[in-house]
Length: 416
Length: 188
Image (cartoon, rainbow over all chains, first blue to last red; front, top):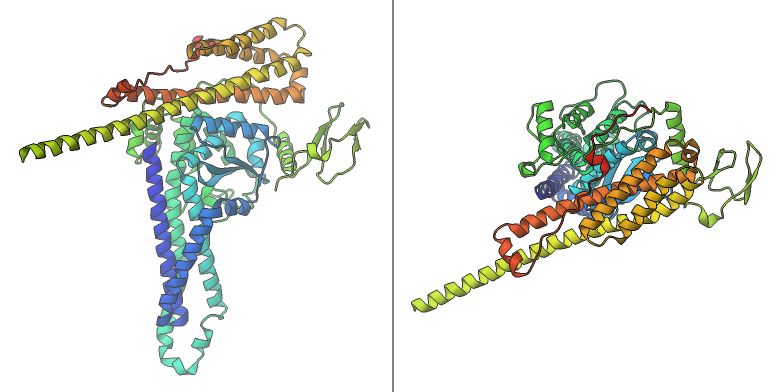
């Protein structure tokens, strides 16, 4: 356990150093290309400054930036009691010092992520689509997976990397656009005095373009390769926390078989933090090579289903070896653990839910997040009242009873 | 001259031992605090379970006229659990209460009106969650107790534990009827 955390902390530092290196090299090349050889040093200086600002900003409020970029809204217990309860259950199982803040993303695509600086100040976000589709055990599996990210200190790394990667991508995009539109360095290219230096200038410009294209790619490759391993680790942690790998396996199965369009608010920089890749292409086979942010879902499900002996990290490593025939992604120290038995869970008594019902429920969750108030009439009609409805009473459209609305203070607060 | 060297060695050794004892003592205290914290987590959830029951019984009573016995079992088990003093006693009483509640939840399936009641559904979710929280808090507490007891029994920390009277802690083992019996298959 502690070995896992230490490995993660070390990786975070290595990644930050690599990011710094990439950013400084980029600054050097860009400075050189735009202002000639004397521009190299200021370029590095500016890049160092950018790196420092990025690091400080991502440390201070990286989680807030990522949550805002994903359009996640903070919610209270009343909006979705089951989600809150499940998060608290997993908080207790993980022995976490504080309850993570809970967010809902108003999107029908099923997905979830965790972010934050430390287990003391973590945030957990799930989409309305996920809540509508999963039953209690499955939701518990997903929340446990996210809780493992918090427990393993993945969240700090992902937050830092997400914000910094965003920074690198932004910087090189600004540069590329500037070069393409000829606003940078153009006065040099057409200045008659420096005709002799034109050749060298062109070569350097080409190198600069190459660097600007490659730098974000390189940064991303490293980020992805590391984040795939983290997904396996979090799956192993989820199985151990819930003592029930089947819950997460079924959840992943449902998410994989889902036909809604991909998550609207996800992009290249934030994709690796989700439980399943939010950008995967419909229909076609997903990329499962070096550039893939997530391990193939089918493989993750097979590994979880293979854990028939117990739910310790050693059991996960054995299942992993049986399914992939590859080296286990778990650190050796985690494998000396004692046996942890699987919890026996009674099969859910509820029958199959219809797709129409699910869509209905997802819509209700989204309305609730947006501050709608729900009132059940005596004729069992559920009336949805928008947050800006100010009259004191409402007439039931089915049985035309007059219902009084609770006063403004009693209503659940609208999400930010 | 040799006596001074011997003296220095002895003093250095003494300091090393004192440092080691301090380190082990602090580790033991940290583990014991984690055990205590784990226990208080269980305690919080058990209290919450006791608080939920009257509400649940009150809501369900109107719909379930013929289940007087079920309600009585729950109420009795609740007061027994609230009066328990030792860990073993509490574990036994809470196990009985958990049994009574899971039986109650099965009986509820026969009352569709009750299952349509929004208020009851909310209470049912709270009860399910509380049962889960108790199970997970127990899981966490037992993990903590295991590492604490291991530390107390293993050399050299057992010497320090003996010096400062660190005593072994009990596991919180709840054996409910469901865990004792082979599950029966019913075709309802």
